[in-house]
Amino acid sequence: MKLSQDQIKKIFLSLIGLVALVYCYLSFLLGPLQASQAGMINETAEIEMRFVRCLQNGSRLERNSLADQGKIRNANRFPANCSLCRENR
Image 1 (cartoon, rainbow, N blue to C red):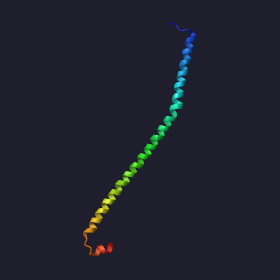
Image 2: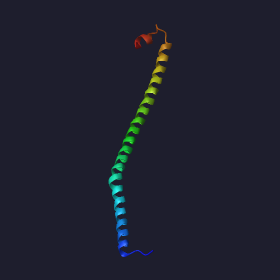
Image 3: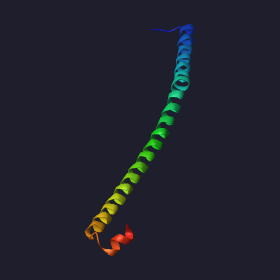
């Protein structure tokens, strides 16, 4: 199969058009998607940091409440007529 010079030019121009089409697709259509993806990744990282801070605050509050419960138990061991208890109440 012998291709004429005109057919070779058409094939070459078609390939250039195909490359241009793929470039336009990747840059104009997928470019905004990549920017959106980067924004989502940043937002997810920010939410994750806030979640970790909330967990840390929750564990700190739990430790404080356990310590307070221990103090309350110790305070309840004193009799009601104890002079130390009347001064603290």
